[in-house]
Length: 229
Ligand SMILES: [Zn+2]
Image 1 (spheres, rainbow, N blue to C red):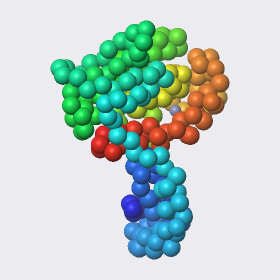
Image 2: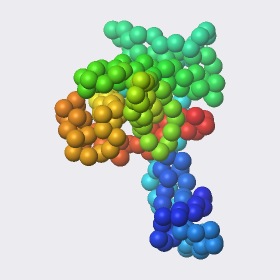
Image 3: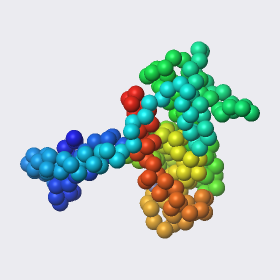
Image 4: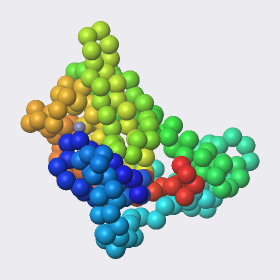
């Protein structure tokens, strides 16, 4: 359990941080922290029920088939440098990496992360172009709190956007919506009507994509979590 002081909060509260798989008890001030801890103890059954609902942390192992941007990818153990093998008539795309266990999982994750960077660079350049904005600098990170964040351009410089690499584990349309969303922030640093008008002009109705992220976000964070990825 994590104990937290939140100066803006009015009261003691409990929530489940789905990405980190932990309980967060918040108190409005330091001297009420022990009260927050007691409150959490009194709600142990509720906490256990919420934790049990979380997706199981997954392991990455040879033989598994995962989906990367909605396309099936088989994980295979093979000697040599970790690499993608394009799909053929009778088999899906493969990721081949050495060994098994943690080293294998780490190599797989690095390849997916690289793929995510390539995809987000391309889609951000595309959407920024459609919005008449300069191509932003793009990076991928492993933040647990947000899927993307955008720093709009300052005079004389390009904007920059960071995406969670775990969006590669979502369907392409969902990840692509996040790219459009962050690019719209290059023009509008808020979630006002003008911002949403830009997003809808790029990808149409955003609601199914947002609903998908709410429903499956925790599963994306559980991916590889068994191996500490
Ligand atoms: Zn936003």
